[in-house]
Length: 149
Image (tube, rainbow, N blue to C red; front, top):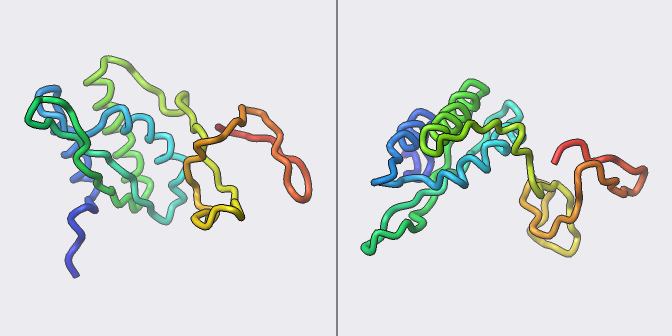
C-alpha cells in the first residue's frame, strides 16, 4: 500500500523545516513553535501524528497558508529529534532561544462535552477556556487541581 502524500517521516519533516527561509517560506514558524509543547504532552510512547502548517508566497508576495503535513512520530527518539529541529530552526530564524516547557499548554482539554457530538475525550483545543493554573475542577466524585496548563 502506498503512503499518503500528506504523511511524512520525521526525517522528511526536518528537511522541510530546514528548507524554510525568509525568501522562500515553507512552514508556519509561529504555529510550529507554539505546538511543540503538544508534541511533548501528547506523545505517549505508542506513536502520534504531529501537524505542520505549510505556507507559501502568493503572486503578490504575501505569505498564505498552503495546506498541512502530518509527521508520523513513532518513538521517543523521533519525538526528540523533531522537537530539537523545531526549536533550533525557530532560534535560527528569530534569534530567540525558546524553552518549550516555559511556553506551556494553553486551553487543551480532554473533557467530554455531552452537548458536543465531536467531543470524544481526545486531547483538543478548548477555545472558550477560562481556567487558570491552579484552578479547581469540579468532578462527579472530588475536586482536582489543574497541574499543568
